Image 1 (cartoon, rainbow, N blue to C red):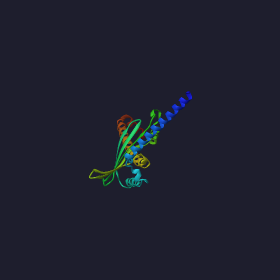
Image 2: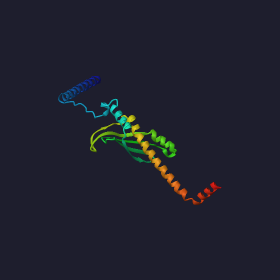
Image 3: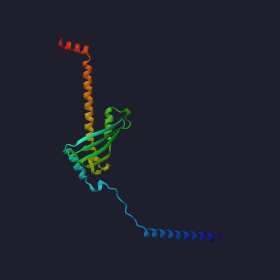
Image 4: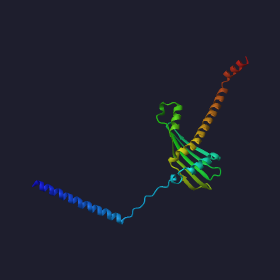
Length: 199
């Protein structure tokens, strides 16, 4: 008797499952029949139209051939260096703006050369955009994402190196001026050196 009751319960449960799944399937079909499935939109991305990077390569070549004016703004500390580079073509109709940064983690126990090497290994780019200007106003603009970094970072880093070399040169000039001024004040030693040369 118990076996018959268990078999009847299993049959009833199976029938209920079939009925509910049929109703659910029918409900889903009715929704799909009455609704519109919209296509997903794609964000504009230069990669789709400039697959071979031709436009970007032409822009970079133009920067190298023409005398573009560069300005570099730096924000540096012991762990992170950030640079904003602006390049403007000679006719002031094109402008490139790029932001790159580099970091050196755990640099407390490194020599100055090791820190510099660490900074050069970890260069990243956050922004690279090219703008067309008309009367110093923005006319149109293209933004490039980080997939272009193999082309954009070397271009921008060249200006960062020039910027740092100028700073180092100015610091060296100032050091030499200070050294000369201090040396001029060492009257007794300078007099003794002059006398030793004469004798």
